[in-house]
Image (cartoon, rainbow, N blue to C red):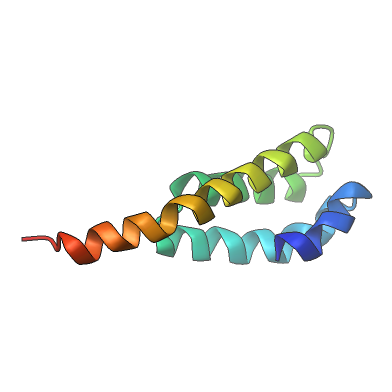
Length: 86
């Protein structure tokens, strides 16, 4: 999704990102990507309100949180399998 959204973000067409942000927010929250979900939520509200002046930098931060989530998620799943809750 983020790869497909990058051209719209680069062109400052941030309102086009709203459906993707909404979906990413929910999916990330479900999978435990707290920072990613929070940034997607923040951007969704920001862009709905027409506040786009920091949109490019804020989208870069979203991409950063995504990369971080992708790197950490397999380890989190492995820990959950190895050490199931009591």
